[in-house]
Structures are given as structure tokens and as C-alpha cells.
Image 1 (cartoon, rainbow, N blue to C red):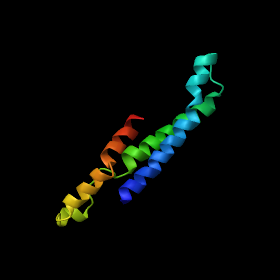
Image 2: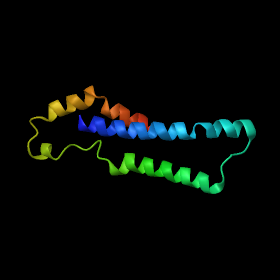
Image 3: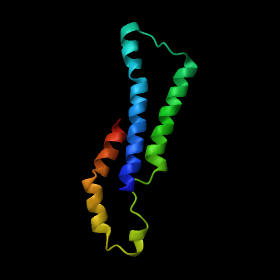
Image 4: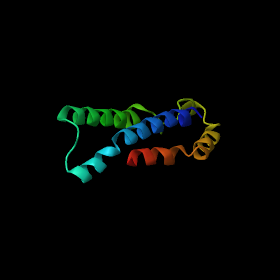
Length: 97
């Protein structure tokens, strides 16, 4: 359940980034230029890289908890809960976004 809650936070942060930047391709297509200066573009690219890094490198979403290394009698229930909460598919969707 904790992984699902943590994943929800990253999903929300990703959605915020998408909303914050959704106007950029529309403006570019309509006017042929960006209404942002180079520094603003670089700041936004940096924010996106940080979010991507946090999702893919700093989290342990796909790791099996250490408790199962010594005693794996509850691992089937753990796997069922991940499947029920659709954690693997949610991570895959975030990776594509």
C-alpha cells in the first residue's frame, strides 16, 4: 500500500509537469516561436530531468522489500497487493510519459 501511495505522489507531480508545459507545443505550432527565454526553457528541462530521475533512479518501486530476502512466506500476498493496486502498469505508464 505504501508503494501505491508513493507512486500516487509521483503521478501527481508528473501530471503537474504535463499541465505546466501543455501550452508550449500549442504556442509553438500556432506562432512558430516560444514565448519563453532560453533560461526559462532550461529551467523547465531541468525540472523534467529531476522528476524523471526521481521516478526512475531514486525510488525503489520495483524492488522487493528486504523482509522477503530472509522469510518469503508473505511474498505471494505482497505480489497480489501489487497486482491489485496495478503498481507495475502505473510505473510503465509514467515511464512513457
